[in-house]
Structures are given as structure tokens and as C-alpha cells.
Length: 481
Image (cartoon, rainbow, N blue to C red; front, side, top):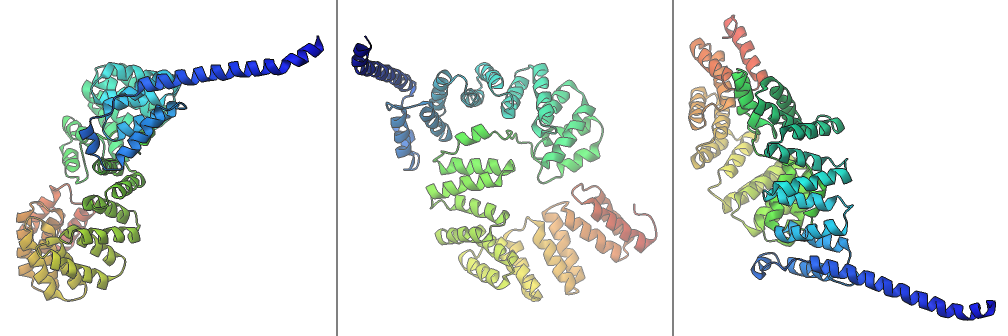
């Protein structure tokens, strides 16, 4: 018996192996069939042709991989991300719907699907998916925030409030959660509570969030001075900004559209992610090296990040591709000036002016360089030319006036200040300088008038207003009006 078993054992092993292989083949085939059935129809040929040449090979390779014998959910996920990143949102949603079935325990698929559904206004299916995400990944805050915001829009404030509060419990001082609760306070007329939260939001985000609500809330509470001060902030914005969402941002990394990449870069920069913005713009430049505006956008971000060498390379490429693009010459020259190379900056300004003789910004740079070098009359002429070309901005008038003051042509300088104020009414530095001149000249009626206008201008820094009041007390011996 034992010997017979030993004789049969190799055959049995081969049989079992064959059965196992057959079972594995059937499982693989079933998975392949499910993935193949999930593939959406290809986008229209015209839509595909509108994208850069790099898109079609990437698209075809991912579709082939997702339809192959050994395809897995990750391959379909990569195809979904490619569709989403390049604007084929219906195709992406079909992929995500299939992935939710293929990998029911993976929270990214319902989250990404819900994000697209919400964008199309399909609230109910988006809400149900985000509720599922929170069961699968309760620590993923962006899903909780997006769900809360959608519930708020769909008149379910109590649940939205609970979700916003839970975000704050997990991440204290989260500005989007504070803003959500402030919106609920606003809708309920709880003005003091709304203001408390909004003041924290604008402090955390430098007015990138909350500006659209804090002004009317302050007015409801009778604090018109605070409302005016907020309105006067140049950076304030009422635009909605989504909270950072790493899963959604990762899905956009396969974008092949330089224009979309530039838009995404702008969003990243506004959200406080300059590295992400630069990464997207670098990809856009790689895809479309001849797109000078995108290259310029990259150069300005690199300069702001302190990477002067890379910024200069891109500014130079901009001027080579578009010699008449004045802003590239301006930024490149200013970068050289800030790097301590006034001669190099002057050379770039001179070259730029030969290409762009009607650029007010280049004439302004020429005026500043001449003034710094002590060539005051040359500076005066360049300032006048800059003003002639762009008469609506007060900065050149102001700088011309201060240059004339140095030449002791005071009356002429005051006249240019007043012309600048006519061009750009209530320009804060001009108001302050006119007030200071009137105080210094001992002209109390004019000083009182200018100081009153300074006090009513919320964009004049408080420290500057206090210095003017101190100058008044020293000059006239009385308390400032």
C-alpha cells in the first residue's frame, strides 16, 4: 500500500498542480473580464487630438495595460487618474465606479468619485460615498470637510456642524472648518459668534478665506471702521478655495494639458503650496517648451522661492522666444538688481527698451537705477516717460515727486503728488506724504485736511498714521485732529 502510494504520488501532485493552475487561470480571466467591462469608451478623437502629443501614447499604454491578462485595480486607477487630470471626467467616474466594486475596502475610489459627482451637482451619491469613506478612513480630514460643505449647501446644517466640529477636534484651528461653522453662524444671525470665528480665519489665512463674510458681519455689528479696513486690503479675496486634498491632488499628477497645469499651479500657489505649483509648471514647460506665458509663470515662482539661477534661465528663454514681452525683461532685470548686479540690470533694461520702447515698467526701472546712481535729471526724464505711457498708477508720480524734493524743486514735487492722487485717488503713500509736507511747511489748514483723509483711509498703516500725529504735535504743539 505504501509503495503504491509512493508510485501514485507524482501523478497526484501533477494533477493537483494542473487543477491549481486551472483555478488560477479562471480567476485571472474573471478579473480580466471584469476590468475589461469596466473600461469606458475612448474619448472622441477630436478631444484626444486637442491634447499634446504626449497624451495619446500614455493613454493607449494605460488602456492596454488595464485590458491585459494580468491587469489589476491599480492599472484601472492609473487610467482613471489620467482621465480625471485631463478633463475626461465622465470616463474617470466610470472607472471609479468599477474600482469601488473591485476594491470595496479602498477609500480613495469613493472619495475621488464623490469629488467629481459633487462637481456635477449630484449631491446624493456624493454624500453616500463620503459617508462610506469616513467609515473606511476616519482620519482622512479632507473627506469629512468636503462632506460637511456639501451637507451645508444641501440644507442639512446640524450634521454639517457636527462634522466641522469633529475636524476641529482632530485638527484645532483648521481654517476651513472654522469657516464652515462661521457660515452656519451667519445663516442663523449669530453675528458675534460668526465674527469670532472669522477673525481667526482671516488671521490664519491672511484674508485668503473669510473676506466675503467678515465685512458684512462687522457691518451687522456696527463696526464700520473694521469693515472698511478689511475692504481696503489688497490681498483680500472672496473666492472659494478647496481645502488641501492629497488624494485628489495625486490624481492630477498625470495631467498632459499645459493650460490645466498652469491653472492647477495657480491653485496650489494660492493654497500655500509653492513647491507643488513649481512642480506642475515644470511639467507644463516640459510638455510645451514654447509656451512663454507658462514659462514666465514658472520663473516668477522660482524667483519668489529664492531660486534666482533657475528663474534667470527661464526669464532669458522668455525674452529669446518673445523679445517684445516686456514683463520678462522687467522681472529679469529686477532679479539682477536684487542680486547686487546693477550693471547687469541696467544692461537688461537698455536691451528691453530697445525691444519694448513703450514699456512703462522698463522706463520706471530705468528711472530708479538713474536715481540710485545719482543721475537725478535722467531719473526725472525717465519717470515722466513712464507716467506718459501709464498715467493711471500713482507710484511713478510719487517717486518722481521725491526725486524733485531731493533737487529742492518742492513746489513741482507737490504738484506731481497731487496729479498722482488724481490718477489714483486715496493712494495711501501719496496721502501720507502730502500730509507730512503740509505739517513740515507749517500749513495747518492743509495739514488738517490731509491728515483727515489719511485717518479715513484704512490702507494707511497704523504706525505711519501715528508718526504723522506725532509730527503734528511737534510742529503745532497741539493734539492731532
